[in-house]
Length: 244
Length: 120
Image (cartoon, rainbow over all chains, first blue to last red; front, side, top):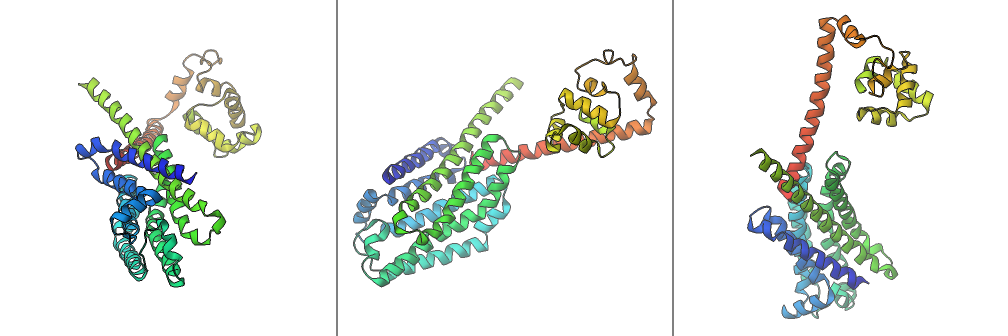
C-alpha cells in the first residue's frame, strides 16, 4: 500500500517536472523545473529499493540520506519562494529569503550535519532504521537528525501558509483558489510531520501517508496553476489574434 | 435593482424585509450584489419601504411602467424634479461605486497575472 503511494507520488512529480520542459526551453520560470526535478529525485531516494542501490554506489554509509535531506531543503526553498511570490505574499518571501529564513536554514543544516557525523552510519539502511538500532546513542542522534530534517520544510511551509489561506478566500478564479487550497493542505501536512516522534509505532504508516499526501498536494496544486495558465494563455492569444 | 433599493432605503429597510420574509440578510444582499431580486422579495421590499407595490417589479424589469399603472413619462418626470445638484451627487455616487468595482477587478486581474508570471 505504502509502496503504491510512494511510486504514485514519484510518477506524479516526475510527470510534473517533464511537463515543465517546454517552459525550461523557453527560459520561463526555470526554477520550478529544477525544484520539481529535485523533488522527484528526493522521492526516488526516499523509496527503499532505489535508496539502497544509490547509497551502495556512494559507499554504503548512508550519505544518500544526508543528500536526500539537502535535496528536500533545496526543492522546498525554490518552490515555496516561487509560490509566495506568485500569490503576492511578500511577507512569506521575506520569511523564506530574509535573515530569519537563512538563519533557520543554516542552523538546521548544521545540526543535520553534526548529527550525521556523530552517528555510526555504516551499512545502508532506508530511513536509518538499522543505524538507530545499533546503540542507544545512535537512536537518539537519529531522532534529532530526523527532527532537523523535518524542521526546515515545516518552517518554510508555515511561512507560506497564511498567504495560501488568504488566496483561498480571495476572489481569484476558481481554479487558482483550488490550487491554493491544495498548496495550503500540503503546507499544513508538512509541519504536522514534526509530531511524528509522538506517533505510536503501530500507526507508523501514518508518517508515509502524511508525507506523500503533502507532496502530492503540492504537485497537484502546481499542476493546476499550470493548466489554468495554459488555458488563459490560449484565450488571451485568441483575443489578441481577433484584434489584429 | 440595487440602485432602486438604495434609493428607497431609510437605513433599516433590509432588516425589515428579512424580518418580514424570513430571508437571511446575507442572502438578500447577495441577490442585490448580483443586481437581481426575486419577485416576492421585490414586492416585500416595496411594502416594507412604503412605496408603490409595483415599484420593485418595474425595477426588476418584470413588468413595464405602463403595466404597473404609472402615468406615461413618470420616471422622467421624477428625474426632472431633481435639482442639478442632486443629480450631480447621485451621478457621483454611482461613478464612485463603479470606480471601486473596476479597481477591485483590476486588482484581481493583476494578482492572477502575478501568479502566472511566477508559476505559469
